[in-house]
Image (tube, rainbow over all chains, first blue to last red; front, side, top):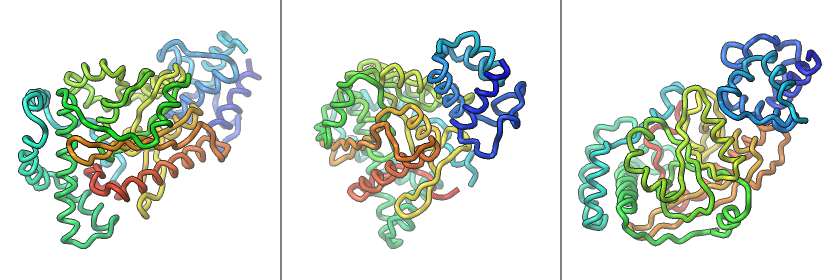
Length: 85
Length: 296
């Protein structure tokens, strides 16, 4: 699971072009959006597309995606439970 | 001016009652019989709409480099052109016919015939909404709309939207409309979104427009590059109440020179602004941003 979390962080940093950040800068339990990492809905879309491309994950509804995208911890849990790739 | 102030308030003018009246009038008579009302109405509009008046005056004076007299004259003519465009739209809703010459129709034909979604990046130039009502689409189209608009005028728009296969995606404060936009595109549909009005929060892109730097919302451009689908823009330009020309311009085939999405979004924005400049060369009076577009 820790390896998956690191992989997700690297993919998010690369996709969102967060040049001044390293995986260590992202707290696994911190919120990804607003007061946490400060991401917004456009970034959320980029993350959804990473999950689709790399893990074959498609969110059935918005509520499901909101819960999964809460933090790196919740994202890793969701990916390990639903990945098809 | 803060970005918050510059953002669109989310509501179009007019009431449902007014819209119904106009539809009834246009079922009885063609637009030229109603235009005289506009001649008077726009004088009142110019007097009471300080922000709109200033925005259009500065557009003529500072951007189009006209002298003071010409700027004042063109301020009136711009409002007049806008008023007529709005009435023409109601006339079409009421069933009146207009002739549309389509420039580059093959671009639209190719995209609508092939499988896969595409994005239309609209602008507040010309009679944009009329384009949606008059062109035949073989795919379902999803239109991103301000919530205020959706509540106020959907009652009248709904029947026309259903007839055309148009669906509304209301802008939501939590940004969840982004996912609806994504689902529309991956579902092989058309996504129609404005590229020139702020309603995505504070994130913006800068680009030169008519020789001066302006801000644009980052959202539509980032969504477009993230989806990697073709992007076009449409300009429905008015000649007279019966004749319009629809310009179809391909902005991207879904591929970009730059490697990351932020740079790709800027690349797409630059192509978009070049197309706007080109159309404004031909139709400078059909610039319908009634606020200080370049000032922030």
